[in-house]
Amino acid sequence: MENNDRGRIGQATRDVKDYAALYADRLRLGLIENLSTFFNALFGVVVLIVLLWIAAMFFAVALTWVIGMLIGSMLGAILLMGGLFVVLAAIVYAVRRRLIVDQMARMFGKMVYDMRKKHSDDE
Image (cartoon, rainbow, N blue to C red):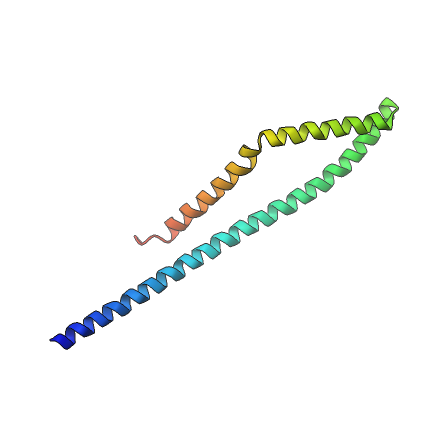
């Protein structure tokens, strides 16, 4: 009888170890999936920002040239464009929390919620 109890305890111990290993694997796979989604989104945003920055610089040079021809002073046009960029930078700085921090928090929250929903033990 005692031999049978030891066999059951040994089997239960092995089952708990297997369960813990599977649970750890599931968490690792979920983390890998969420990190790959995050870095994919981050890479896309960085590429988009770089391309938009290049386009903005071309448009800024063209607009500076046009303003310089209209007002007759290239120095005045450069100063106007510099002022415009300072105003735009101040606006972005003022709404940085809504533009950047809130979006990142929302994305991480969605990842965690999706991971819990996808990998719940209720299945």
